[in-house]
Image (cartoon, rainbow, N blue to C red; front, side):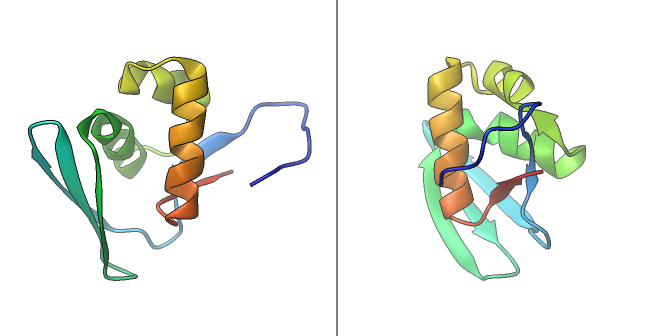
Amino acid sequence: MTRPPSSSPPRWTLTHGADLSIHVWGDDCLVHHALSNDTHRLAAWLVPALRRLGQQPPATLEELTTLMEADEDSARDALEQLERLLLVEPC
């Protein structure tokens, strides 16, 4: 999704009402979104960021990038994909 430029970078949070259940197996994980009853198979490197957002939202892109152990472009792309799945949203 394209957003208009802003003076400060967005912070991220779980989508309103998201109650995620996360199960990790090796390099993959299953994330169940209780409100929508959707289940998604994701890469396990996203789990630390999702857990952080579930415990203490919101978080900056920089913080989530560190948790994902990714470069900023990869982290931004991952967050945008998670946004399309209605798991996270900028705030």
